[in-house]
Image 1 (cartoon, rainbow, N blue to C red):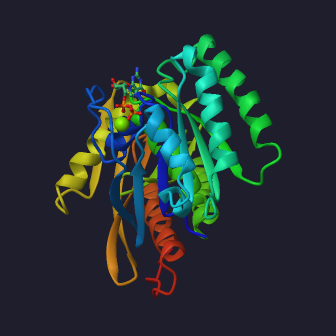
Image 2: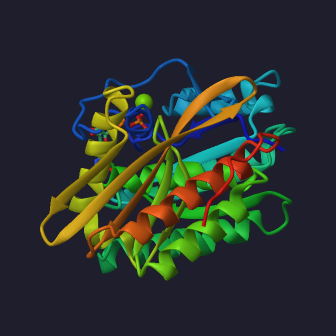
Amino acid sequence: MALEKIALLGLDNAGKTSIIHILRGDYQSYFNNIPTTNIEHYFSEFLGNHLIISDYPGQIHFREFIIQNEKSELNNVELAILVIDIQDEERFQENIHFINQLIRNSNLSHLQMFSIFFHKFDEPNSSKYNKIASTYQKKIIDLFDSKNFKYQFFNTSIKHPISIISAFSDPIFEEMEYRQPVKMLLRNFASNWKINEIFLFTSNFYQVGAIFSENIYIDRELNNQILFYLQKIDESLNIISELEININDCKIYFSKFFIKKKGKTYPLYVVWKSPEQVSLEMKNSINILKKTMKLLISPGIEPDPIYV
Ligand SMILES: Nc1nc2c(ncn2[C@@H]2O[C@H](COP(=O)(O)OP(=O)(O)O)[C@@H](O)[C@H]2O)c(=O)[nH]1
Ligand SMILES: [Mg+2]
């Protein structure tokens, strides 16, 4: 079942509105947000699926209202993203209390999945944050113990937009029938060509799939650059479809293609990092990769003949 009604929930100042800015392609990390005092709905689309992303106010009286109100809009939510400010240790109990109330009191009749974001995880290797996160994790696992909800933990930070994009995309694409085959194709391609990182993005930069080695956080600067160039290509409409850039000792390749779904055309971007120049064989292999992905994501389209 598709996860299309999504709610961002959490205490005030947790970073919910900032996360939405990132998802909308605004990577200027430092906003001075005014507190959200209404439920704000954002509409988004990817590959023929329509998302409603709702930003819930986090102040205590709104929280109580949302949880206790029988007719709460929460009843329609399919994916709940719980945002926890990992830097604000003082609010540990308040966070746990909120989560407890949420899973016990409300009528979350359509809810299929909880994503828990340990947010403001600005330093991925910080032992302090890791310790706080694992304390939260233990407590939250206890709370969910008797409940039937699926849940997953993520570390996110606006200083590292890809962390937010992948945490957001993960459960949404997990529900898509093409998810596993696409991942397998990416994995094969990466291992054939000894590539450490490869991504497949939609035009609003949701992450359909990705393969990367170890800790993707390490290359934060590089990954931020990827998003920057992706935006440039997307904004160029169809003028740029292939791009190769050099950052430090790395080459990053962008390759655009289109799929048709429900009568509409959508661009997709394969992006990979490689120490090597793209050879002719590799070019052929990329074309085959793109054609195969096209068939997987929009089945029913006549395949172009592939000449070997
Ligand atoms: N250091 C850091 N600050 C963040 C991060 N995300 C949001 N903030 C800041 O936290 C504050 C509250 O953010 P906001 O999105 O308004 O929180 P909301 O009340 O949950 O909507 C703002 O000053 C943001 O700039 C993050 O990942 N790291
Ligand atoms: Mg807000």
